[in-house]
Image (tube, rainbow, N blue to C red):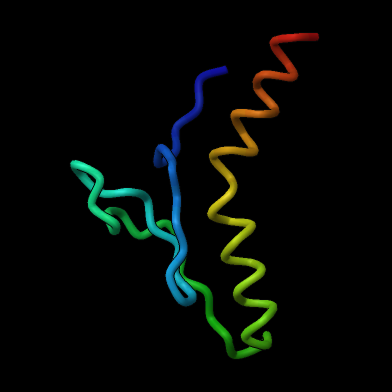
Length: 68
């Protein structure tokens, strides 16, 4: 599978998700910015956690696919 996406790891800070920057800097490329207009802070935080986990989830699914 050939994917095109911002490589992980992704981290979240407040209501934004960032890819790790050069040389291990905390912030690099902005991956997502969550609007809180229609969600509580808790829901927006949960969404940010899920989005930040996307590269790890993709890797796990690829490992399962390769093992099948």
